[in-house]
Length: 210
Image (cartoon, rainbow, N blue to C red; front, side, top):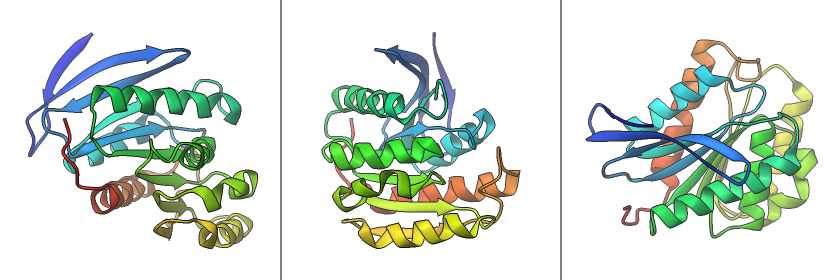
């Protein structure tokens, strides 16, 4: 089902369910987007967090595609789903810059896809996840990458700090108190959403978006 609703500062958004080859998601398209961002939620990012993230991205002028995570924890199944979603967006909006916002295991999937298919990912935000599990992918990630973690686990913080210099493109690490909780407190979720939207606004290439 399609529906239209108003986004402050923009024209209308077309919202519809889409899916193919084992993945489904909600696509919200702005009339004149600055680009599009695929959201790949994980265990630490529930539906309410995804809605806040989409709202922050809409305010910055980005269309969004929020993919249902399915069985959380299976990186092998998330990665091809993300590739298919990005390919769908590339076809539906040729020339548009594409970003990925991955959370938890979705963050690992985002990093793997950015390494394997640099043509599909112009910028990404990876919240949480385990860098050590996908460390081999880091030197091949050319997309501008923002790593976001909470402040509750020193081992996780150390692993992110070790991994950050391995990224081949622009990179930054942000620590947001409470962002490692599941599903996270409202203040932390809001802070991460705005950090991500700001990163995409700065780092996604300014190309003509259809």
